[in-house]
Length: 218
Image (cartoon, rainbow, N blue to C red):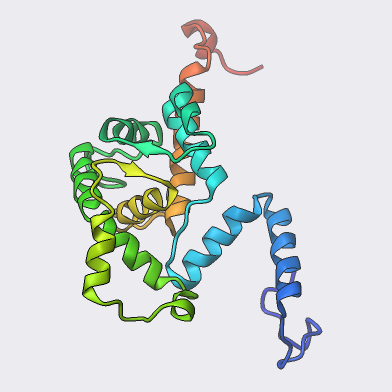
């Protein structure tokens, strides 16, 4: 390992370039080294480069299964629907709730964010679309207000429907975190799953008798 090595020591010319084929191979190699799926790597890469987050389909299903259990089976092959009660269960299942609001937010703050985000979902989805790098290739950067109003009218639901809308909700939650101990919405979900898994493992661990627990190891 040579973290401070120059381009010349690494055998790379300063005018070297990476085409699309090489980039795909590079991403596949990085995903293999990190032992993560390619969709997760691409989602994190997109966030760090452009602050555009799209929850991968497989990981979204994994999160819903962890939070809702058997109830999440109805989402397989269909558009997921996350009501306020399901959202509350997801918060607790992923260990997002912090009543002291030091490492997270309290439950009432999260639920207020849910209500506000759902009411503004149409506008937020339009903004997400406009921030995507390819959006300027197929539509004008400045969308007429009438068009945005028509698209806003498509979102009159009182629940979160779809993984794009779920991605918007996760970004809103990430941006409101009091301490930036996580680096992205995806990292926030992964950290929550790890905490919840550790808590569950600790609760399932057998308790030793007092005499055995206090006995020094031989």
